[in-house]
Image (cartoon, rainbow, N blue to C red; front, side, top):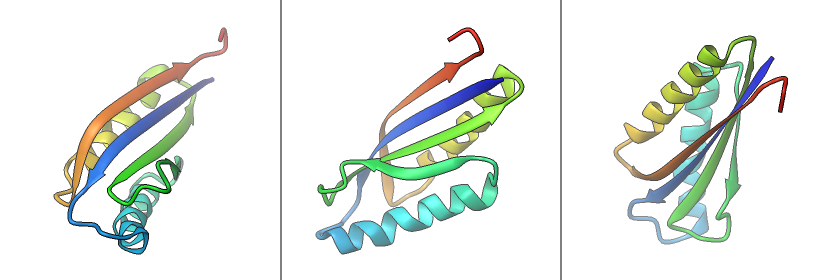
Length: 98
């Protein structure tokens, strides 16, 4: 069994309040959940900053390759959003021996 974790640090566009931030981040999270129903996704950091967001994604799979593939697709989905700028992405993979 393998567990993959992806942390995305994103910069939001023209956002001036936390309410506007939620209106940008929630649809991104919902789209990831819709396209990849087997992953867990949430806003995991920078919740008090209105122009930055940290999105965490986790997946469990029987193979390391599948974990990596799903996380890469999630990263590409977020990077392709025009209202967001992906600042950094960090992937981690945990196996049975970790």
